[in-house]
Length: 414
Ligand SMILES: [Zn+2]
Image (cartoon, rainbow, N blue to C red; front, side, top):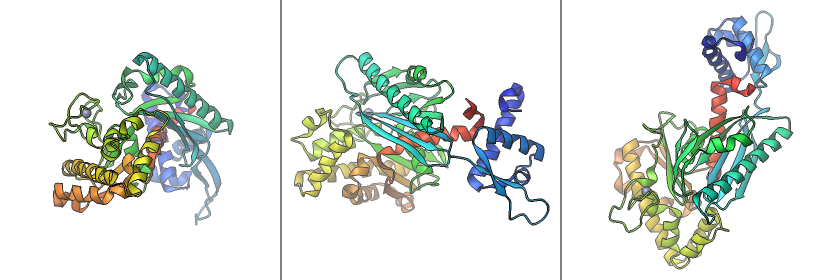
C-alpha cells in the first residue's frame, strides 16, 4: 500500500511515520528494520511497509547486512539514498537570477547564475513579464539538465528580495525590483511540471535558513542574518525556528528607522531607513562620490562587480573610500547593536555586499556594535561574515524544499 491509496483520515498518520523513518535514517545513519521499529515504537510490519514505500520513492536503499548484530539473524541495513532526488533553490534579485540544485544527501549538483536586466525601461507590467520569462527559462533549463542524469527534481523554492505572501505564492512588494502584487508562482506554474512542488520565500529568510543549516554556523540556535545588497533584508532564527511574525513580514530590518531626519528617502517611502545608510547606493555614494551615479546606472555591472570596485579603491589606499567605509561600518554596527539588544542572538551574520567588504569593515563594525549594545548581550554574540557568500538564498531555497520532502516524503511521488 502506498500513501496515495489511503483514506484521507489515515493520510497524516502515514505521512508522519514516513517522515519519522526517513529523518531517522538521514540524521542517525543506516539502521535495520528491527532497529527502526524499536527506535520509533512502530510495529515491524508497519516499518516494513513504510520502508518499502521509501525505497519505491528512491529515498531509501538497502545496503548489506547488519554485521554489528550479535544475536539472531542479521537484518538488512537501510540508508538514506539522497542521490536521486534533487531540490532546487532559485534566487531572483536585482540584476541576476541564481539557480542551485542539491540532492537530498546535501551534494550540490547544479549551480548557474545569469545577469538579468530587472531595471529594464518600460512599464511595470512589461518589466515583470520579461523577468518572469527569464526566470521560467532558467528553471526549466535547470530541471532538464538535472533530470538528464537520471535524477528527479522534487521541489523548488523561489527566493525574492521583498515581502512575500507564502500561502498564495505572491510577491506583495519588492521595492528594489519595482514589483507589487505579482503572483509569481502562478506565473511560473505553466512552465514547471505539475509533479514538482513550487514555493516562495523571502531571500533573507532563506539566507538565514542556509546559515543555520549548512554554513560555518550550522546548528546555531539564535541567529540574525543581515543581507545587504541594493536594499537590506534580514532573517531571524529564534530557538532554531525562522521568525515570521503575524503577517510573514518579520525580519525587514532594512527598514528600521535609524536617521529620521535623514535626507534620503527609502524605496519603502520612509526617511532614514537602515538600508539608505548601508545599502549599495549608500556605500557607493560615501566611498566613490564622483562615480557613484554612473556605477549605479550601469546595468552591465552586477552588484558584486560594483562592490568590488569599492573594495579595490579602499585596498589601493583611496582616502575617500576608506573614510566612506568607516562611516558605513559605524552605521552597520549601530543597527546590529539594536538587533543584538532585541533578539539576544548567538551570532549575527553579515552577507551580500557586507560579505564582500567583510575584511575591510568587520573590526569597525564590531567596535561600533560594542559601543552601542548592552555588554551582557554582546558578550556571547559573535559578529561574523557569512561563509556562504552570495549563493546563500538559493542554497537556503534548496534546503527548504528538501525540508518539505523530509516532512512529507510522499511529495516525491508527484
Ligand atoms: Zn525603508
